[in-house]
Image 1 (cartoon, rainbow, N blue to C red):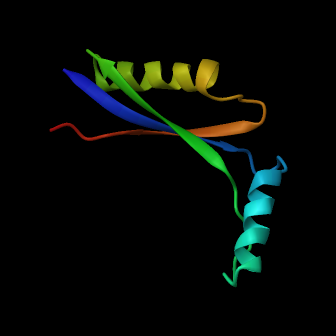
Image 2 (image 1 turned 90 degrees about the vertical axis):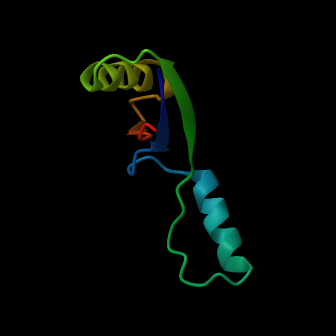
Length: 85
């Protein structure tokens, strides 16, 4: 049995996001009024074989996110496990 999860990684709110600012400015310049802010980010789709218990799965994903998928100094992450069949 395998399980799929998605890990979303974004800059922390206190970190300046020049790409997000550029996108927000571009949206406003082409007529999308009301855009206050845009923050860029990325996501990782992770498929795990034999994930173990829900607690073990969460622990493994947390470790992956902290050690490899994000830079905890400047980034935050969110883990979403897809429901099984």
